[in-house]
Image 1: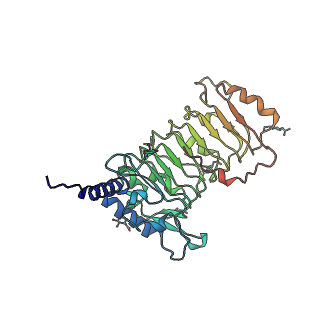
Image 2: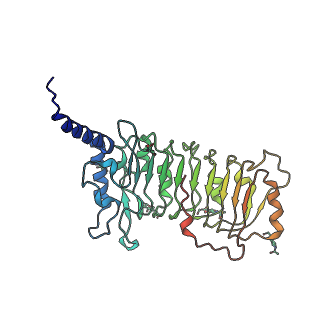
Image 3: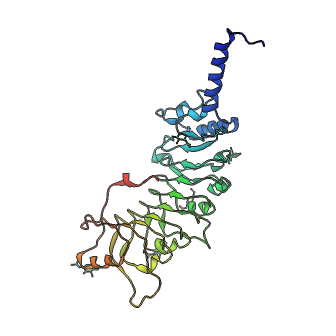
Amino acid sequence: MGLNRFSLPAMAVIMMINAMLLSQGCLEEERIALLQIKTSFAEYPNRKPNQLSYWGKDALCCSWEGVTCSNSTTRRVVEIDLSYARYWYSSMGDWHLNASLFLPFQELKVLDLAGNGIAGCVANEGFERLSRLAKLEVLYLGYNNFNNSILSSLEGLSSLKYLYLCGNQLQGSINMKGPSKLNKLETLDLSYNNFNNSILSSLDGLSSLKYLHLDGNQLEGSINMKEFDSLSNLEELSLAGNKIQDFIALTGYEGPPRLNKLESLDLSYNKINDSTLSFFKGFSSLKHLHLRNQLDGSIDTKGLCEFKP
Ligand SMILES: *[C@@H]1O[C@H](CO)[C@@H](O)[C@H](O)[C@H]1NC(C)=O
Ligand SMILES: *[C@@H]1O[C@H](CO)[C@@H](O)[C@H](O)[C@H]1NC(C)=O
Ligand SMILES: *[C@@H]1O[C@H](CO)[C@@H](O)[C@H](O)[C@H]1NC(C)=O
Ligand SMILES: *[C@@H]1O[C@H](CO)[C@@H](O)[C@H](O)[C@H]1NC(C)=O
Ligand SMILES: *[C@@H]1O[C@H](CO)[C@@H](O)[C@H](O)[C@H]1NC(C)=O
């Protein structure tokens, strides 16, 4: 054998370096794609350092801030946190994202793009491209400038379980054409947009929804219980900070019980009064009912927007 006792320490060092590379390294293809993302997010040279600033200083991209890799020996990127990664002012105008930049991450499970002033995607490179990422479960798009045109590009992301669109420019209702492919979606956060009462019935393709947040929108007056007919699996419904006065059920309704899995209902900061409270006795599974402050109907807690799974 060529091994002598003097080369053992050297071998140990080499093995340690190898182990380190294995644990922090990543696929060449994914590292290059991360650097492309960095380039596209870092258009403004004088910005404050953030998670992107140190990307590329070494090749061990699984240790880069905001990047999480799987624990398997293949070390694929499973999570990318780009929240507030782009330096921008509202006066800088619309910014459009190239969603295809994320296609190399075939094992990606969580993508956080919150707070980057994104108005939409570049032509033909929208979120519909991400339907090829079969493991994508969590998409944070909160606090951007998306309008309703974002919605059709998300319809095909059939692996999604959690979708956060709070704090954008969405309005009216969602126009879902035909049955939605989002049939695994459990959590939908549409808080702090400009949706009106029509939003509830327009969610009828999303029958797997368990958690729905619509805080700080334009829902008002009487909410007809039939709006909830397709949302029979809801466990948590948050409607705080709207102008809701009461809930009504048409007399003579004999269909299946509505919202009979609902455990938590938040109606704080609305216009509910004592005379309508008896209605809530109808929610047989309700454990938590929040009715704080029904006086002015305004809510200023924007920070509540994202509730992470
Ligand atoms: C990897 O394993 C560690 C320790 O068991 C765990 O804390 C971490 O969540 C795992 N990461 C992933 C992405 O599974
Ligand atoms: C979007 O990104 C992909 C992948 O990097 C690239 O091939 C494509 O040319 C880009 N499209 C535009 C319009 O920049
Ligand atoms: C919605 O956003 C897209 C992408 O930025 C833009 O092209 C479109 O004009 C916007 N639509 C409206 C009604 O503002
Ligand atoms: C909600 O907004 C949509 C589109 O903006 C409109 O067509 C609809 O009539 C509105 N619904 C209610 C109940 O105001
Ligand atoms: C309570 O709310 C109901 C339904 O919105 C309304 O008809 C009634 O006038 C309200 N009562 C008071 C005292 O404001």
